[in-house]
Image (cartoon, rainbow, N blue to C red; front, side, top):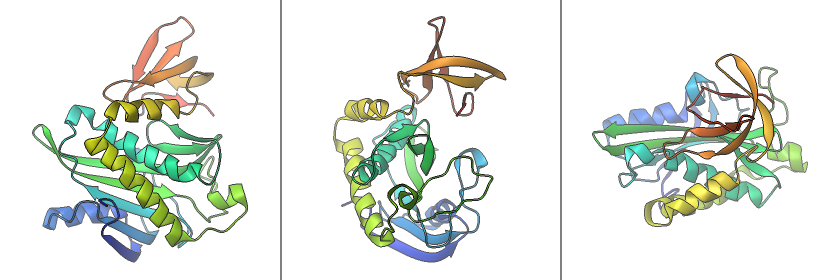
Length: 246
C-alpha cells in the first residue's frame, strides 16, 4: 500500500495542504503519507477559494506523492486518478456520481467533494505532489455562501463512521494511484471522461463574459476542457476560462 501507509492525525490545522507543503520543505516524507485534520482554520480550495467543513463532520486530508514517472505536461493525470479514486469510493454508497472538471465531485447537480493538486516541478520532473481532498460526510448545514453543497448524510439520511470512510477511501485512492504509476493511463483518461459531469449534453456556459450553449466533448492531453458549440466549432478552455451555469 502506498497511499495510507502512514497517516498523521491532527485535531486542528490551518490547512492540510499548507502543512504538507511545509513538511516537504524540511524533509522527504514517506510517499503516500496522509495529513489528516478534524478541522481547518483556512482550508484551501482551487484558485484561492476556501473549503468549508464543520469540525469532525467530514474528511479533510492531503496526500504526499512523488509521481516522478508522470511528465509535467501530463500532470492532469494525477487529478484524474484522484478524482476516479473518490468516485470509486462514493459509487459504493450513492448513485449518480460525476466528476465536474477540473476538480470537483458531484452528485446530480450538487458538490460533495473538492480536490486541490499542488505540484512541485524541477526541470522536466514532478518532484512532489500534494493532493488535498475535502469530502462531505456527515455535515448537514452549510453557509449561504456555498451555492450547492451536499453530503453523504444529506443523501442517504444516515450517519457514517468517519474513520471507516477514510480507510475505504484511501484504499480506492491507492488502487488508482498504482494504476497511474504502473497501469493503463489511457484507461484512466477514458474512465475520467466517461464520468464527466454534463458530457455529451447541451448546457449553458459562460466564457469571456458571454453566455453560450455547448456540449462537453472531452479533455485535452494537457487537461483543458473541450466544448463544442452550436456552430460545431470545438473550443479548449483552461482553468477559470469557462464557467458552468447551473
